[in-house]
Amino acid sequence: MKLLLDENLSRRLLEAIQDLFSGSVHVTQVGLSRATPDRRIWDYALHNGFVILTADTDFISLANTLGPPPKVILLEHCDYPTTVAAKMIRANTAQIGKFEANQEPLLILRRP
Image 1 (tube, helix red, strand yellow):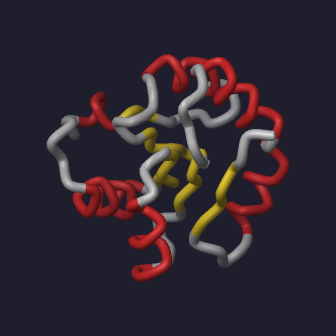
Image 2 (image 1 turned 90 degrees about the vertical axis):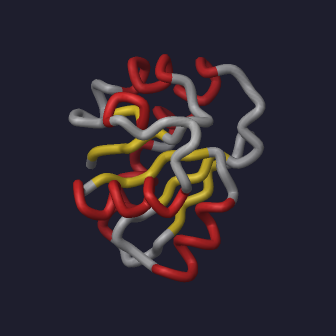
Image 3 (image 1 turned 180 degrees about the horizontal axis):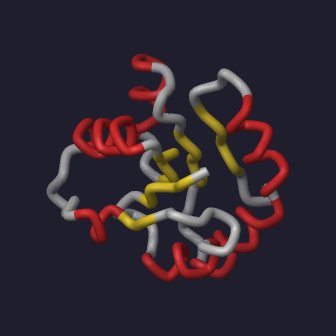
């Protein structure tokens, strides 16, 4: 699974999980800037085989309205450090793998 990290997540998070999700990129690495509308990010993920990793709740509406692909992983209330986000993603690797295989459009990861 390749993840497309949204602008609201640090590029350092990508470095911390790259070994689990090879081929993943941050939106800024593919020319999508802070001013890029969510729908354009959605379309980029769709056409390039990415799952969107975000803290932006606007993607919930897109996922529920348009359905997969792409799928969306939301880090709920992501006001915590990047290291905590990385640990949370690592702790949920099995759940993320199951999510990839099912038909659900959205996976919400909550901080314990």
